[in-house]
Image 1 (cartoon, helix red, strand yellow):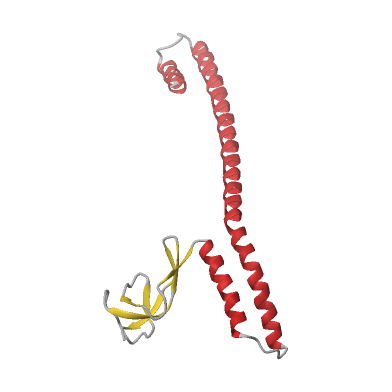
Image 2 (cartoon, helix red, strand yellow):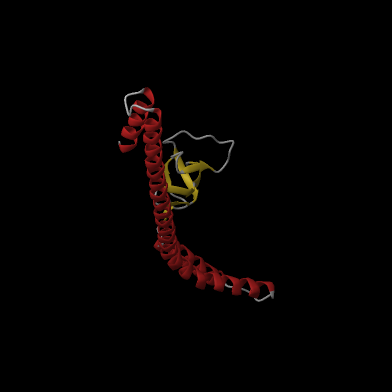
Length: 176
């Protein structure tokens, strides 16, 4: 508002509604100009302070997001580190010709599955299950076998969801 009043006063001075002489008008305009320059400088400084404040807030927010993400991912990675280490050892044993027991490999797979469940990964359906086809969470095992929503299908391979996101659709075929 102050800026608007000053501009209006300067305009009035230019149009003759101010001091009587040209010299007085010029002095009045110079005074107004100096005031406007000062106000502009103050506005620039305030804007610069706000930019700095916004930048600091963005950095704080980025740090909080990183901390939150790390707090959620670290337990999952910690839980996966042991079974991954065991899988690596089993792979090396297999490569060296040492026979492996299927039960040992399945036990490690179970640890991986449990770690996913603990992190919020949800299995969708179980192999062999009969259910109605849901195109949002399922896909036909064979592309040449189109299915209608609700049609009875047999689950061949489980799918997975995290929160509301389907990460892997359930593989199905027509009911048997």
